Length: 165
Image 1 (cartoon, rainbow, N blue to C red):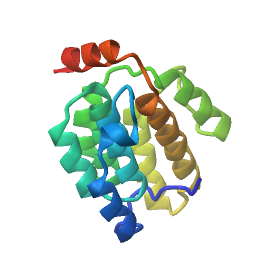
Image 2 (tube, rainbow, N blue to C red):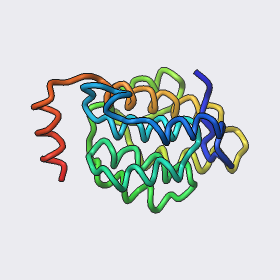
Image 3 (cartoon, rainbow, N blue to C red):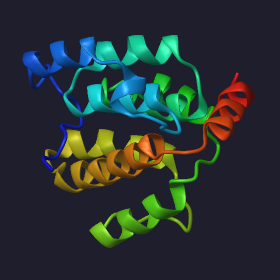
Image 4 (tube, rainbow, N blue to C red):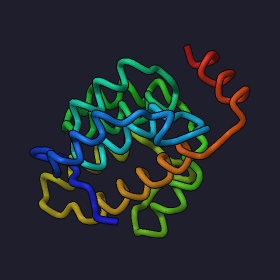
């Protein structure tokens, strides 16, 4: 997969944006744990930050809050990113993300710290050496996408969404 820009200046593909705007999350990710959050993640992958943001405001979930934090981090809005990550004190992808990040060479504590990663992305961009941050961001995207798009029993998914509201 191609690395994602830390702070994309524009959409990567207008045709993909148009296709995603027409997409039905439930049809695209049938039976998914959080289809709307997964669709929001696709928008982010293609640097469609506004579209991701609009979708995230429409469908609130813990997974959506995580994507929301990533979206604001990609906007280079550390304050708002931190706000949304405070709404996700722990997420099931954090342990695997900490491990993947460490394997890539990103030094983490024993647990994933999204606030430290916000600061790291900012510092990496300022230094002009953002390749590691991009690789970690891609690992984060992949793990969260796999989690959100994974099929689960519909009763479990409905219960999770109800609990998140």
